[in-house]
Image 1 (tube, helix red, strand yellow):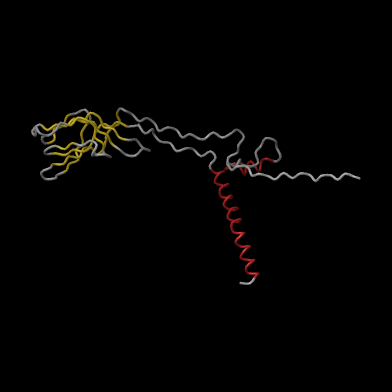
Image 2: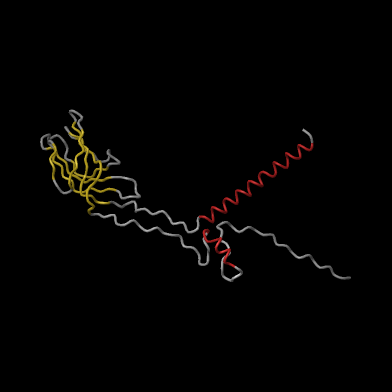
Length: 212
């Protein structure tokens, strides 16, 4: 390789990192200015539930594997085959939270005395946590439907906008502020960047020579 080619290659290797840092800092600067005054995402608290007037249960007959989706009204007793079922409450997660259903119910088999009596909660997202497994039937919670009842989830919380220091111009108003500045005092000519300030080199004046 000739000396000239080696010098050109060496210069290119030195220039590429400089260009990368220059354009990278520019993109970071634009992104930092763009996040000013962006509303935070809103969602219900993790403990929020919405009550419904009906529950939907999946009931499977063990002898022939026949499956039915049975809607049941909250507060009423219903007979399905040999089962006596009473739903006390049906709750579902509101929007913005992961979908889930919780059903509080009482189940007993009037014919098969060896089948256990169930009295508790069932969750659609975790069937193993609460499920009825009798001699003839298996019961699982599927969903809630119907009218809204207590407990009420209430309205979705309002979006919270980050507080911006007084006098700061947002990114969208930067051009307008720059155009309207016109040398007026107290008007920002550009948006305030979120990047750390660039250190500036202090230039000391040259020492004056003493006249002999």
